[in-house]
Length: 237
Image (cartoon, rainbow, N blue to C red):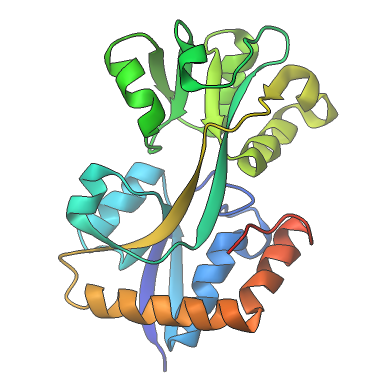
């Protein structure tokens, strides 16, 4: 019988990781397929993001995904090669929004950030010097509701994630309520992480990366992306 590997991910990251999505979401399926190819039996748990990463830090889960690099995380975790290349866009209210071309255009506004998300480096200094206000909400949907109510002025999200959540809230009226700026804040990468305290962490990361590359080159991962996001929706790998 294959050895169990305990995996942790978030609960509100459709179409990438979400218990209500097909096979748990695109990235969930990719990670599960990779570990199955490695000879493991994936045991998947969905948690609030902070709890997911804390489970890995405490060795209650073997690995978590998808997470971006931060200084704090880099001290504690091994990272896989990128499993997702992601565009991060600025979303504002469709009724009242400011033209955006660069982070400084957001000075004087209030940002909402879902719990467990990292503050993008382009905004850190502006927030720390209080040129941008920030508050944290429990979920992506709560932040989008904040835009609609006027409590927040902008949210930084992956477009795929934002529009799935917005359509869940407002159906076809979503584009009348929130607006995605044409210029993205940045592009980023997301990874599988394993604690540096894990006794087999480095070896698992090396094998994960080798299997990821092999499945990428075979076209198997592209087929998963297309299944979830359509033939024009899969990210550059």
